[in-house]
Length: 393
Image (cartoon, rainbow, N blue to C red; front, side, top):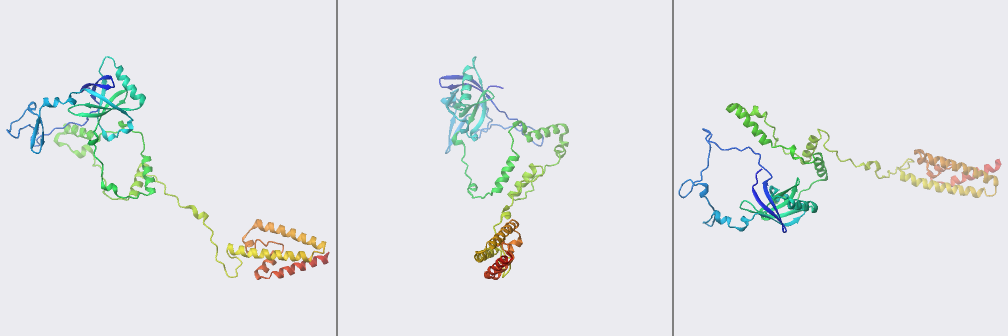
């Protein structure tokens, strides 16, 4: 590389002599213009509009025109501007690197120490490393005062030329003020597409296809001359888009299909599983039906239970004077409790029809009495059973 400029970094009272090199270069193939009839080179001449003479570059000056008036600025006058004569890169601030918007970045330059002892250069580099900051600098290069950022790349100080604030245009587009509704599913699918394409950036993976194909065309042209067949050289023409306007969701699905090798684009949102736990809805009450809905069965059960209780109380009153009757009643109640437990454990559809709460030894008769609404009959039958028990004793 050839140094394009020499100067010194002014770091407080410390001067760091440096040489400046262009850090980047253009890899584009250089082409020139020719006459298509005979291949003659086209050259531009600097011709004066007043005298029509061809002017040498050494006789050309710069000028500024304002409202029809032309001001000529000679080379000596331009060189007399103080900033133009400065060969100093002045450090004015140290700022966090994230505060520099990449849109301001312009051309990059490497800085090489230009002294017998690079200690000052190393000191500045170490200061930037320790503080994790970027130095904002001002310098003049090629007839222009510039703003720059001094940072480190591969242990080398790099000078990044920046645009001035008024050189960055404001982004104002009416279309962006339109209210657009983006669904949650669209956001999820776009995020899935981003994730499927996520990777670490490695610049070496990418190539300039146009320049490579231009080089291929030139080499084929040198070999075959005017007999060159471009379709044979580059193969079949690449398929372009069909121009079909498709739905945004469909485009996202197709993109995910392509990235995932034709697999499912994205799992569709699961259906609401609340059907398994749907709220209870009472069945319609049928007229006189013993197998009605759950709520009506519950009502009848309560009625039957009340009638059965009254019948039991009446039986206790009639048998108060007989110990044998009490034993028979206790035995009956024991059997009733056993039947009640068995019925409670079973809790089948049949139990619901006959009345779950009135599961006694006389559940069938009591259920029949509850259906007819004659609880007294149940009490009479119970009393009769008690008398029979006393006679047997």
